[in-house]
Length: 384
Image (cartoon, rainbow, N blue to C red):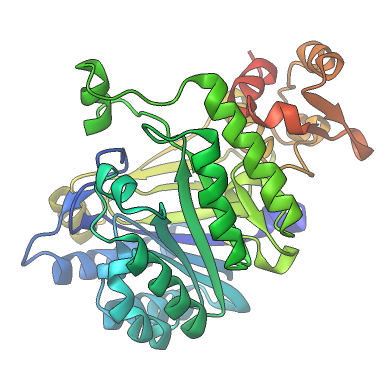
């Protein structure tokens, strides 16, 4: 394995939220009394089961996601980190990250004391009307104040925003993003709003109550994002993620994009371990409902595992890897790992169209124009 593929990450899914945002399609549940302590026991048991399953490998990153993991008690965060270190060993300088909302700013000090060194702050918008429409329970002033508090308490902070919102014009987004980059964040995630099946937004769209920006306007907003972030010294290193320097990039997310290994604990968490050339890539998914997960962890059956087919592994590596702006994918490496090749005939055609480039070492990466169609292009060159 390469150094990237040999690394291991740990993802912890905390499924509870104070409220469910109408655009969210993650595995989340309204916070309820009486469950968090029991869930912590299940998380620790599941972590031990993973140690038995794959042996000891040091962790390059630990990431708490959800849901709203900043609702966790700092003592619970510390307990998971302590158990992870005892079972696997956390590398010196490993990224220890957590996703949080601005209205949990009063918990930041405790989370930092528990061992969190990087946070992704879900500010999402910088005007109150948009925040209300997105179902957020903070206002713009609280978002900005939380960002400053986070920057004081944590080594690294990502400012997370959503664009192409209902009623938003390219000029609206340009003003908003200009305000964001003036804060001089070291990392910024700018995600285009997508209407996911099963969400409250999808139901509103079906009823004709939601009118997102047209595709051309969304494309203009993407171009504005590239221009403003590059000018501010925050170039894209992934389709939706920007960093001031390599040390500020998300280590945990890079594990996904680079096809490295990670184990996931918590309701609905996914895992990928191993490569085809070493006997197959293990895929696992935890039980989605918290009660089922807790019961499964107690009996050692919280996870359902399978071995990916070589084709499925090759497709995943193509879809994820192509999102990296500079590195992209190495088709020869994918074929060496899986025995399956990407569609080079389609790739050549896309290079001619100017949405894909071939770089040093036979790498394929998206051009700036191609990033707008990243998912579509990845599907076109993925193994049939």
